[in-house]
Image (cartoon, rainbow over all chains, first blue to last red; front, top):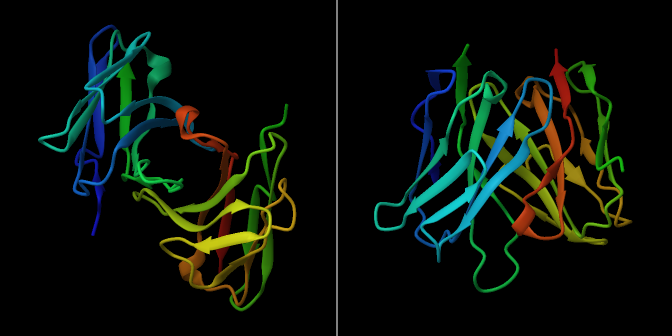
Length: 115
Length: 112
C-alpha cells in the first residue's frame, strides 16, 4: 500500500516556463513533507520542505504548496531551467509525538526541461 | 567535509555470496538509514539507526543485517545474495529533519 504517490512518472516543460510536480498521500498522520532532487548516478539531495502547520513554503525558484484537506502537495519551479532536469521525489514523515525520524518516499517524477 | 561516503560504488555478486556495503558519515549525525531503489520505484527503507548500538527494521529488511557500533559507521550486510537484491543502495544520515537527509552517492549491486 503506497502511502506517498507521485502519479506522473515524467513531465516535460520548456525552459522559462513553470514546472508543477504533484504528490498525494494517504496517511493522515503525516505532518512533515519534503522534496528531493536526484541526478543520475548521484544520491538524492534535499530541496525544500513544509510542515503541516503551513500551506506554502518558498525558496528562490522553488515553492511547495500543501493542501491538507486533499492530502496533496505540489512543487512549483519558476522559471524552469535545463539544470532542473532530474528525478524529483516527494517524501513524508510523522514528526509529532516524538522521535519518528523515518521518511516514506514516492516513486519519483522525471522532469525534463527543454532548452 | 565528506558528508556520507558509501563504498563500493559498484559490485557484482554471485547468488549465495555475501558482502558488506560500507557507509560512513563525518557530520556526527545520530540518525542513519539504508534505502534501496529499484527501477521505477521509490526508495524503500531497509534498516535504520537512531544512535550507536540501536538499530531497527524498516519496510524491507529480509535478507539484510546491520550494526551500529560507532556514530560514524553503519554497514549493511547481505547474506546469501539473491537476484531480488539487485538494486541501488543508498545510505543517508540526519540530525534534524528540518534540513532533510544527507545521502551518499549510492552502491549499484547486481546479483547474477
